[in-house]
Length: 173
Image (cartoon, rainbow, N blue to C red; front, side):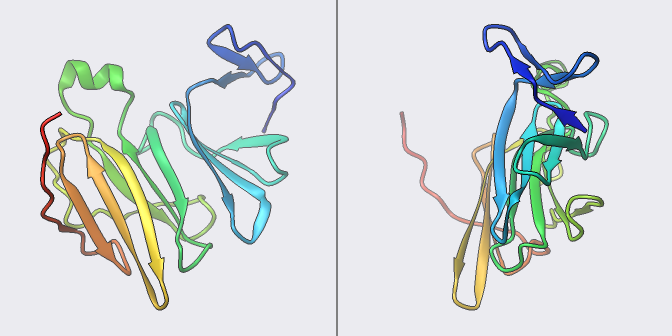
C-alpha cells in the first residue's frame, strides 16, 4: 500500500514513501456511494483503491493490465458492488507510434479484484480510445454512455452486454 507523506507539485511525482513513487497523472477519483472511505482512482499508471478515505492506496492494476491507462472508473448506478472502468491498453505515447489505443470497457463484480469484458458492440478496430464514459439512472434501470476518439457514441441500457450506436449530429467547430 502507498501512503502519501509529501508532495511537490512543481515536479512530476509525489513521494509516497522512501521507495515508492506516486503518479501525478490522476484521471478520476470516485467514492463508493455506501462507503465514503472506499475510493477508486484511475491514473496513467493503473487503477488504485483506498479503503481508508485516501490515507493509503493499493495498486489494483498496472500498465501491463488489459486497461493499462484507465481514464474513467465508476460504480454501477444500480449496484455499487459493480464497478466499470474504461480506457486504453497503454499510455498515449504508444498510440502516437502504433496509431492504436485499443480502448475498451471492463466490469468488476468483486471490488476491482477481477475484471471481465463489458464491451460487446464496441468497435474492435483498436484505433480509438474511450475518453467519455457516463451513466444515467432512472427508476428501474440505467444506461451507460461511451464516446471514443473516433467521434462515435454508444449507449447500453441495463447491461453493457449489448452496446448500440446512437445517431448524433456533428457540428463544425
